[in-house]
Amino acid sequence: EVLLVQSGAELRKPGESLKISCKGSGYSFTDHWIGWVRQMPGKGLEWIGMIYPGDSDTRYSPSFQGQVTISADKSISTAYLQWSSLKASDTAMYYCARHGVQQLVNWFDPWGQGTLVTVSS
Amino acid sequence: EIVMTQSPATLSVSPGERATLSCRASQSVRSNLAWYQQKPGQAPRLLIYAASTRSTGVPARFSGSGSGTEFTLTISSLQSEDFAVYYCQQYNDWPPLTFGGGTRVEIK
Image (cartoon, rainbow over all chains, first blue to last red; front, side, top):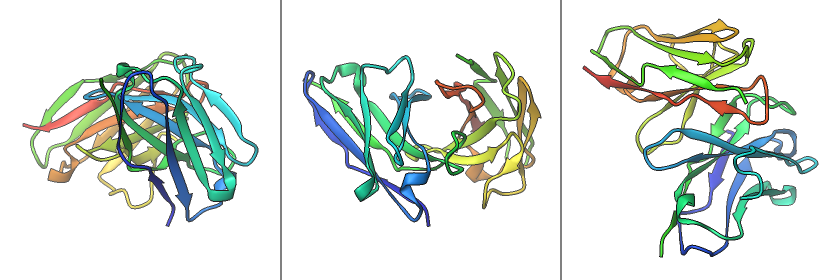
């Protein structure tokens, strides 16, 4: 079974840094793009960016470029999303999701369970 | 950036009735479109990819159609477990990958 398991909920103060994780299992981690998606409270889905763990090729949405960093450690089949200085507006649920076909960027399947990030003083 | 527009924002349907959800792209995405279902407190789940192909395990009452800029998700006979929010997503032109704003299907 293909699974993505994300790290637990986080509570941080504005200005703090954070790195959340997404561990893949049940498939060849290096062969599929993994994307990150934000969902702010009560709102829709927004694509943040993606990484190809095989060679660490990374792409970002223009809306998130410079605001977050996506990385991966293929030795432990884990992708990361990190912030260097959080803002209250970063409060959201963050999902990782694998792209459905090897080496191609397409639909997302499956999704991780989500990591809730709360930024509050 | 390709803008995806879903309509209606909310659809009120009685159990057993048919639901028709629309998704429009600001430019052609060919058949490179997916549909997801999201229930409260859960991650999205893939229903349809390539505009009309059901994902593994998705019931046959879900069907997708369309190409270019106009797409439809049809639920032929709504069951209680189908009341949820539905999103479309294009993957023809990126970055960025883009989602529609969602359609909430609620009980009438």
